[in-house]
Image (cartoon, rainbow, N blue to C red; front, side, top):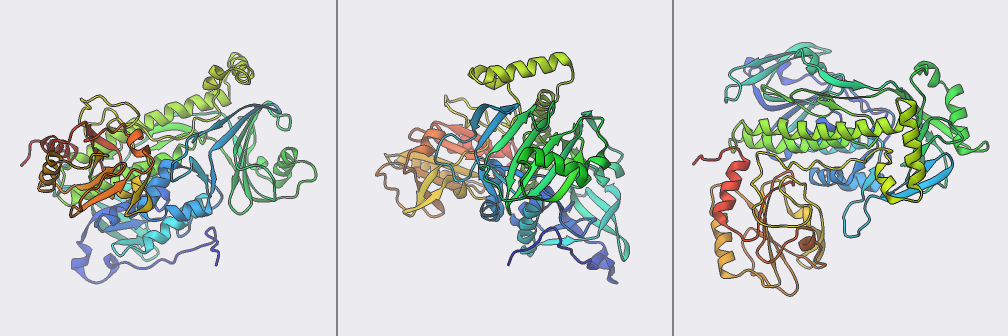
Length: 569
């Protein structure tokens, strides 16, 4: 049975803090998440999957309406896989790798975001935000240690104790249909959107640039024979002197973005009398369609100065905002969630120092700056701010038809890619010579493998904890490598171990060690892994360190560094 996620409504339920028992009122939850959008749900699920109880509060009682965020990248799909709902997203979504750029009515060039084979997930899927929220919510509702509280609006924030110590906590005042109550948490994640009540209650702000332009989003339901590609027009004849973006979504819904200009009247432009002629000019006079949802928006590129304030951590749109060109908003927010969740779990469980949470802020502030920089460049190219800028843009587009160098300058939205956290304090310097992109700080790429003779994917073998990946090639594990593996398994910090073999190599069963076979050699190639190479992978699937030969002592030291407990016993 198909579920209409746009019409779902959730009943308010009184919580234990509103009961008569005084002891329940003093409970301190390990983690509280504010906001049940994609970022809040992803954070809550990820923390709960690692065994930490979570309370999720939201001031509404429904999911989003309209398409809103629709483009979800391969990296985000990898994260959704680990959260247990990636396949549902892909099954429902529209997968795409190819985009086309037009000037007026002529094709400028075509690009492919995933030109090579051997990847589990496509470069992007298009999926309306209400489906993403619905699938995440159903996963969250299945988790026994995750409690969701609807119609629960945070109206007060108080931080308690000494920051950085175990006695530090946060008290939220929550307003509900049954009145207000205090909610105590050791850590609070503010994922409550671009207008962030949490940010306002704490007297914080975001700084950046608001662009003086307006865009119309029209979700149009129709039968059409357009290919499943991203099409972007500069100055099309059906919408002159502006730009248009076309995307296909599930359920025969097409997302069309029309640039309107700063002087457009938002209320007037949302009326059917204005929207329908614009859509008909694109589709043709005889096209049959229905308007499903319409919105007019402006956008900003901005962020908070710091994402951590005591025991309150900001994620997603509450921490940073970008223009929609490049699909960097929701994707970067989900990557915030993944970066933060494992660190919260480690700190709450006493396996890492509270200082580990400072690295969430520094890493994701760096990523936000990268996204803002790319988003600003896209916006400046799409909406030139001067006659000279427009002449330059149009010249670049004309050259791009025939000259590859000009295509590098063409910018219809540099599409979301994960930030490479090269300067993270959690990395151990790469002292051995490796080629390729898998430097410390990079997110791991996938590759086809076999497990127990069955087709599988490398990323699915990494789990949700620190993982060591040992490439033993066709030679198998020799005596010195086995001794190093035994030393790692006897260490004080738990480490999942994955052994990657090639050719006819036979590896005797090792208790607790996952053995995978690199049948096509793509895993070894993508990680530039010769016999004996060892990668230390973080729980969020970023490379932490790598060595040409496995050294158990060096790995133990890198693990302590990555947990911000370097030098401790």
